[in-house]
Image (cartoon, rainbow, N blue to C red; front, side, top):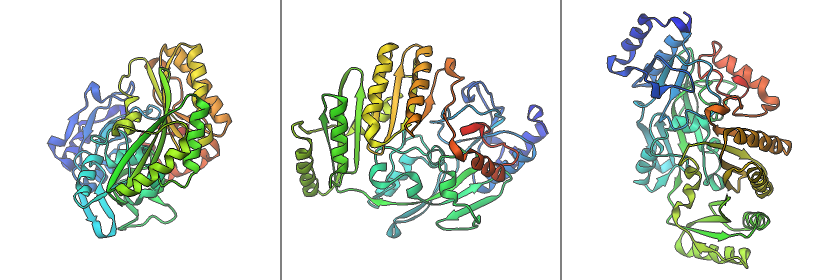
Length: 422
């Protein structure tokens, strides 16, 4: 069956799987770029979800998996979009083995709901993604979204120990953690993290957990220049401090600021602060409001004539990258902000005329890639639709295409969304 001729019979078959209340017409607000899906299907179990995928695969329907919908614009626009597969109803915590510091959870649950449940046992998933009140487990895994806690606890690939995945043909495959069926030769948890739903739809995940800290405190220090900001970042990160997070904030309307987070006992944090104060002398550390760790999220506060990107560079290149953006913005009359972490990952916001945004992002990407880094465009204006979200694909593209063909030979899952048009 061709996508353009989706029959009522196919829609009725979805109704038989999930019930009439869970096959909904898609509205203009559900569109992805210029594509308008026909309907939304909301399975209630992973068995229903796998059956929906099997039927869509047989009918050659392009499937757009969706959790909380917070990052639907990330990546390149899909080349086709026939139906949205919502995970909203698969949102249960399946098992919290608190004594073993692990949790098994369905992919449609939100990060905030999971953290609230874990907190009752004094535990947490050491992850701080954007919009945790809406972002789902599956969506965060698919987009590989993590924040400042990554410095201490590692990336999502370090926290996930098991996953169950519904493949395009309806097969349910598991790997790691509490295994039902293993897929030989693939580390599924790491493979699907950051795959943007192009290999399969995550139905459940198993994570390792960490205890909640007894006490937290955040301190900030202002810097007079890019050079001083880099010196502070490098000195703090290269020290023997046991800090949890470290970030720098740059903007066109204020001096750079470095923030550092300590977690532990009150006495331990006090001792850490004393050591940090000596490292930052003569600049003075001052207590900060806790919301400095929301700085990354505030980049999205307004989307009027704004572009937002995520870059990855060496820690020693953070200030240089920020200074480069400042020079470009000054020439092209753009407003700019950067929030960068000591992992070398940063987020930038540019505001101004679309043509100037386009030119600046391409120039910045070229400079960053020349140094071995990357720049991914997360939000761009309609006038900038020709700019690729990912940039250079590197030497791994051929292998990535082979894996995609193995998992989704008909290319029905988020087609075209990932790097290289995968």
